[in-house]
Length: 172
Image (cartoon, rainbow, N blue to C red; front, side, top):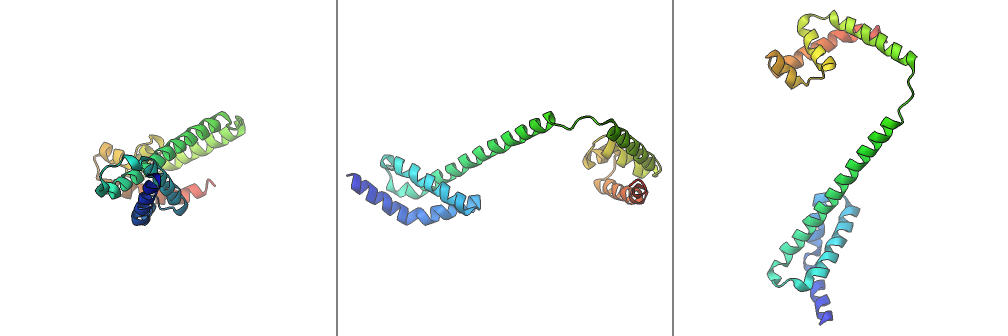
């Protein structure tokens, strides 16, 4: 009985194995990962194989196992990335460089000089630059706040930057 089960599962793998692997590969786009997930699919399928009653649904059953294994992998991967982002951020915050007064003075001086250069711009260019860099508004928010089309805000930002560039070179 067990040998018959193994033989019928082998036939199933021979019939659908290649298409299942290609399906997994099309989802994850990485050969080794696809191979690992394919092995997990086969293992899960083999363990659950005796409980499947309808032979006509084997293919869709295998595809369902494959997509679920891929989803499990992606979920695990996202949790891992989130963990690393949080851990690296908290580590970098706790290990920040010590306070150096000279650097702060230089930073404040250059920020003051930059603000003076921005104040030399015409109002139509100064306003979007101020909102973008000092108020941290997005271009869309600037467009809404100034009742201007997005294209006008983008054009004014570009022109303001073009006018500021030569003035900022003198600061460098």
